[in-house]
Length: 255
Image (cartoon, rainbow, N blue to C red; front, side):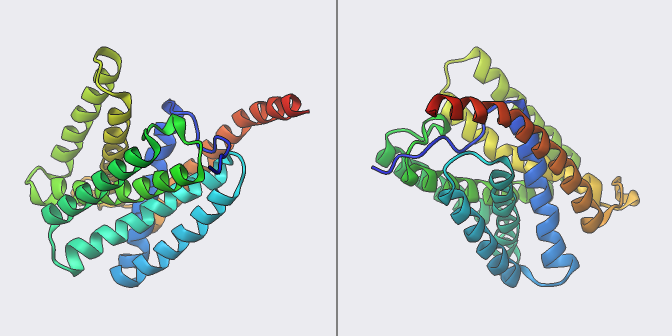
């Protein structure tokens, strides 16, 4: 079996902060393309899915973890996920509830097939090219599900942006507590958190994009994307600097 080196980051607080930033950027950038630039959900989805395939192919080819490339792929999954979810819910008129139900079913199927094939879905045990492909497929659909779930909670459930933000925050707190104080599988908790941090970040994106009258900062999709991109660049540079000593140590061991 084609074995590969570890090519994903360690799951730390930095990972979750960067993940929320990257996926929130994906949402504002996806909305910028589909709505602000009036490209439309269908064409935007085709463009962004193409971008995802290009970036994930590069990620599969490289032999070690490259922070910049990894987070570009995460942004790609989120931008594609945003327009894909909007296309399902708004253009196809499936609605947020049905769209989210379809996506959660697909994600569960991907995780089950991954588990049956690789014997584990832990991100700490991605040692083959096949497992890596399952990983990115799961991430693509989890970020798409996160968009649909966030839209459902904010628009269809009656909770609104503030109510959905408080609900998601509460559930994430429970996930964190479960990780430290229960025996619930850390793998299950990881994927729950991965899905939920997507709509959690989306509420922050709404804060940046919405008008002052709606309680936002009125930066629009363009301004919000620029702010998030700048913050993401800082986080990735910091992570890259942390990775350098590890790479040098690995090189010394090989030599």
